[in-house]
Length: 250
Length: 295
Image 1: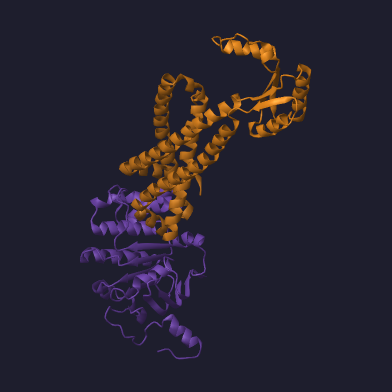
Image 2 (image 1 turned 90 degrees about the vertical axis):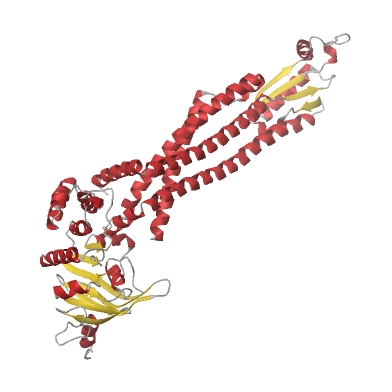
């Protein structure tokens, strides 16, 4: 489970990226974070994998408040979280298979284990036949699938995707989102920051809407534009906290 | 970090060195040039030191007795000096006036010797010091003795000053030059780090520890430093041998001061290799540490 409690993030240049945000993403949940550019979607994800530390509030991942962990523990946290980016971040001089295996190499997994796990990860993203291809020999969609395989090869319980379809055409985008959904069905918690209206609408999953660093809506089975909460909407952690204190949420 | 990780790192390092061939060549030549200059300076310093040291060692304190001083009395003073300054006197030899006269005639065969005989000369005590720094103690003691006419201290004072200057000044300059070399190597490695920042970001993202990220750069630093030192050291020794040969042929009297023994030159080469290795290691440690802190 991921939980942000009254989290604010102000960057050193003074910009307020997140303003008193509370959000809970349950284990095996699938959640879209939507909103225009600069509303704090990426910042929120960065807090979860400790790329950033909040100015105030708690970020709880798997039961631990990761704002309190030491720098030495950050690599261990990141081994439990797969991250996918818009620009894929593949190493151009390594093949698809080597790029995926790289995530295992850096944590000292044995060769034997690596040779078992890399083909499985590539098979999951349907790229086993292109294991020996270099990134520049792959389409953008295929490169993103390699990046997803790399994020998943260590079997992390959480997968974060920051604009994973930002560089892809509609078909490739839909394939990637379908793939993320398939991964979620297997039990991985998935959070996707996007402003791709089409895929959010077609998926009909939980949608958390951000505007100016605040969560303005948090709805189950929602579409991109339904930013107003409706009956049966999922209460945010802030509302849950308010209820726990005997007050009625907004 | 386990063995598998180390094996992976070695492989990655060798691949990176090969793939970034131009950068590697630039870094190695830079390290070679820096270490060449450092080595040349050390050799120059060593030669000056060898010259002053040889002259100091060869120099003697000469104690001349009054003509009226008997040989037995002179021997008494020689024994006194040996007893009192036993810890700094390497050798004290008393020459009676006959020996001094003969030695003078031998050294100056063309000198018109008419009227000169042994009685014109004085007994002489020749002292070689095991600790030349304390020459003045004996000089003052001997001068104060009524049996002594004069004490000649040769070049001790200026030589000792020059030796002290080459020691301290040389060490300070070598330290500065060493620091400059270290910073140059460190900055060169910094460039290789920036060239691979994307890779570092991926390593961090997938959970590599700072130690794991640091290791390939440290290995690369060691490689750049030692290869640079080997090239710089080889060029230095080749150039130095030519200079030594030229000096020895042009100014034969200088040959005995020159540092050119195989053991000594091997020592310089080994020293440069060690400095290259350490500077490569420490330089990359500084650069990676700084880069990771900036992230």
